[in-house]
Length: 261
Image: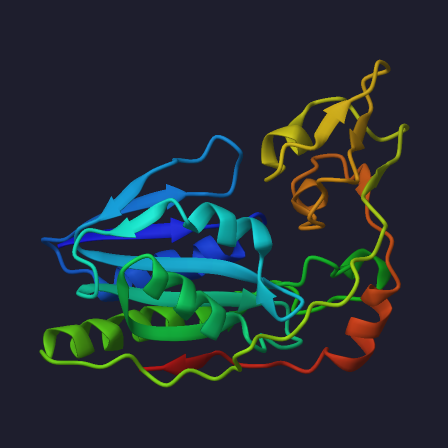
C-alpha cells in the first residue's frame, strides 16, 4: 500500500506524531511517502491512491488557516473510498473544533475518514527559559508510543473490512476565532548572526534580512507559529505576548491524546 503523509508542521511536532502513526500503520511491504506542505515551495498537486495521513496544528481551536489552504492540493484517487487518518496537534489547551474541521476538509477532497486523534505538542508560545513552559518536550516518548499504537489500531480497523467514519468530538458550525494578537517576532541585533535559518523555516516566507543583516518579519503574513524562534541557533528571535503567562497559569497540567476509531 502507498501511504502518504500530508504534513503542515512548522515546529515539527505534528510531523513527529504523524511519522509514528505511519510506522504503526504500515507493514513491511508498504511504501510511505511524506509530503511536507509547510514551506512556500510545497507541492501543488497530490493524488493519494492508498491511505492518507493528514496532520495539522491547532490555532485557536481551528485548523491552521495556511494548512487548510495547502491541503486543498491533495485529492483522493477514488473519491469516497480512499481512507484518511486525521491528526491534529495542540499546545495543551484544547483542540475544540479542529478535528471535525479537518474531517470535513478531507471529505471535500474525496477521502473517507478512517480514524482521528488529537495529540499534544509543546505550545508555540512556551517559554521555558522564562519559567513558563507549556507542554515542554512534547510529543515525548509516551506520546510517540501512543501514536504508534494508534497507527496499528487504525490498520487493524482498515484490514477488518467494512468500516465507518468514527464519531469525532467537535462542533459544526465551528467556533469563531478570536482577534489575532498584533505582535510579531522581534530580533535582538546583538544576537542575530544573519545566518538565514529563520528565513528557511518560515511557512509563509515573510522573514527577511534588513540591509544590516538582521532578521525581520512582515506582520501582514506572520501566522505566529514561532518556528523562527524554535530553530534560531543563537536565540536571537523573541515573541512577546501576554497569552504565554495565561496559558502557563491555566493550561500547564498534563493532557493526554484522544482517539476516535
